[in-house]
Image (cartoon, rainbow, N blue to C red; front, side):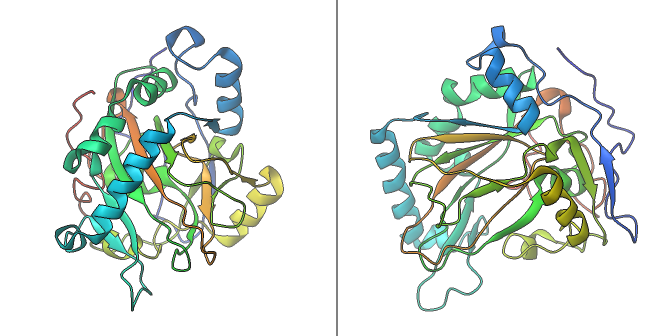
Length: 301
């Protein structure tokens, strides 16, 4: 199943009004079928309904160990720490606590390999019903004691407003490199929230990404909307063992708490967009964000 994308009309306006609004999503979540890839019909139906799917043991223990070793190396590399693609926690003082490193599928062979792995890419193609390209990649650290929260948000709202992604025909894959407990800041999703789009308040400042990657501002949903969503959809806390993965729709309302425990929570985060949904000019920002946040090369994997 394919759907032509309207790249001229803003189907999901945001950051243009003094009042938040909630719009119905107009496109399906799953564009493919059970015959197109690894998910069976029941798995696709669950993803369409909740907005996410958990995949235990997507990668092996040896692969997890290899990626964790690479994470540790990157976090100590002065060149990496000095790169604009590396984001550190705002309050890290004595120790530099890395929050995220972006564009790892282009700068690192270990993470390039997993970003192109059929176990990952075939699922993305199946769900999106087309060839795909990598809109964004990163590794998230959320270190013990230092790891800060990620406030409630829809990724698509930012990608639409600041990167020019026309519709939410994109999906994220979060591969756990550590065990996700209920207490070390795991991903939280409001299941079913992906069927509604929250139009946020406040214009996008110039170079907003420089602040938002450390502490979100523009694109943060109104609290009253979040309260209503929580009552309507509830909150699922996604725990699981290292090596497992969560795939979730780009418009899911999601967040994660800070990590004050000694147990780090690290993951590889890959964003796949349909080649039929390639980004255009931003819908609510002066200029597109840098390529390391929203790829302008839409070549299919």
